[in-house]
Image 1 (cartoon, rainbow, N blue to C red):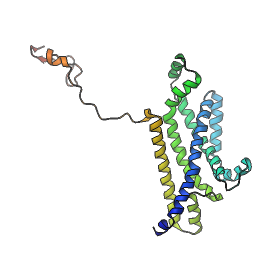
Image 2 (cartoon, rainbow, N blue to C red):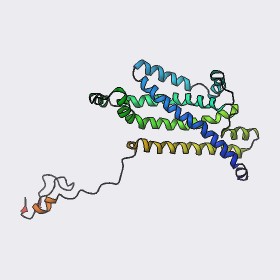
Image 3 (cartoon, helix red, strand yellow):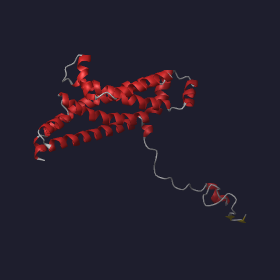
Image 4 (tube, rainbow, N blue to C red):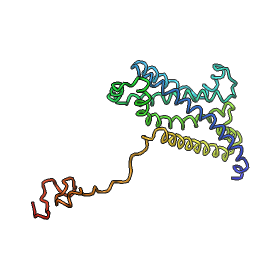
Length: 251
C-alpha cells in the first residue's frame, strides 16, 4: 500500500493515457464496422469476403502490427497514434461479424413494410434496421471494449505509456505489487468502459432496457358485475361453464 500511495499520481496518469488510447479506438471501431457490415450484407459474396477478411486480420499478432504501422502511415514508433490505428483495425475486425449478423437478423417483412410506407434506403437504415440491430451491436461493442483495453497494454512493449507500463516495469524489477496494480487497474478500467457503454445505450436506445416490471395485480371485476350479478369468465378460478351463484339463484 505504501508504494501505491506514493505513486498514485503516476498510476492515475498511466490510467488516463490508457483511456486516451482505448476510447478513440473503440469509438472508431464502431463507426467503421457498422457501415462496412451493412454494405457487406448487400451481397452474399461481399459478406463472405469482408467477414472472412476481418477474421484473418484479427489473427495477425498485435505486436507485429504495432511495429509495422509506423512505416505504413509515416508516424514515429512511440507515437500513440500507432496503437490507436492498430486497435481500431482489430476492433473493427471483431465487430464487423457481430454487426453483420445483427443486420441479417432484421425481419425482412419489416423492411418491406418500411419500403411500402415510402422510406428511402437511407431512412430505412436509420429508422428500422439500425434500431432493431442496435442491441446486438451494443453487445459486440462491449466485447470490443474489453478486448481493446487489454490490447492497449501490449503497446508498453514498444514504449507507449499505459497501464501496461506497470507490467513491464514490475517485471524488469521483479516487483509483484506493481504488476498487480497494473492488472487491477486494467480490469477496473474495463468495467468503467462497460458501464459507460450501457448508460449510453440506455440513453440512445431506450427500447433496449428491460421490460420486466412488477407483476400486475389481479384485474378488478367489471363494474357491471356487481350490479347485474354476472361474473366474468376471465376469472382464473372459474371455468366458463361452471355454475355461478347470483342474487336470483343458481344457474
